[in-house]
Image 1 (cartoon, rainbow, N blue to C red):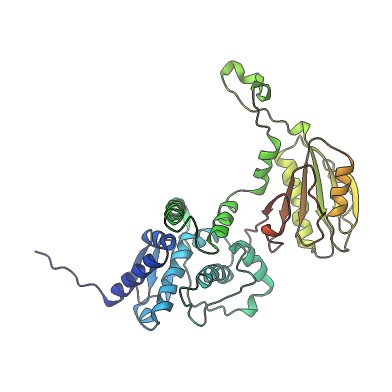
Image 2: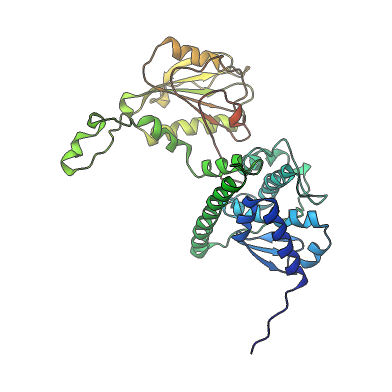
Length: 377
């Protein structure tokens, strides 16, 4: 008859922390059920590879109870928000700092736990995605302590690593869905402060922004008139692509706040639009506080070099489009979002394509907002 192994004191501490977490937050409690915890002397504090959470027993024992609970939740959130999977080829140290800012911001807003004294906090950045924060830290990393108190490991390379990433992604997506359902059913329909915004960011980051154009370029028919009749004999009722009938009006922000790298990014995105939807018709404008154009969106060789460099006002572009009284069309504005908006939304739908670190989506008064997120270091 085998002997039952007595639990390590550190295991009892972690179990107690998880029990307290269950009492404080159904959402975070469900997420913790999807994580595996292991004691390890090989880590100085705590870490996660995306699923397994390693913790140093001596480190946990040195913390007050509220700080220990915060450390456990910190690593659970790193794993659940897939920070190890989302890093890609980015610099590990800077990515770790950006991820810590996101996670510590969530924990700090709950007012139920106490972060360790040297945990990184940046309230001005905490409402942004980890990818945006990473970009903003490119010129500010020296202001932070690069030895993060709580870190997380990357994913293994090669085909085995890719398979593991796909499994982990599905694992945590399922966890987040279940946690959201439980929280909404047990917490008066509310998620913890800051979590809903992060869930939206997490979903947004998976979709290339040009794919969002599809919703604007496809009409949803109410009868067979909108179906492509060439395929009816095959019993395939496909919605007809009407991109060749839809005009696209594109404005590129060339104000003084747009740097050369951002302007190059904007011009590359114009090429992406034409590459994805080669039959579009439209006009291109440059804009700061004034409007320059229209120029041909199709013929790159006929466009002048970008002009501008002044202040930022979005009004001239939308005023110009409104004066033309188009019944159909789409406005795309590539910008950092910092400027003067018109007092009323235009009659045409608007898609804002915003640089990393640009105006938060909630502060745009109209239109749909997507962010350009860099995958580079």
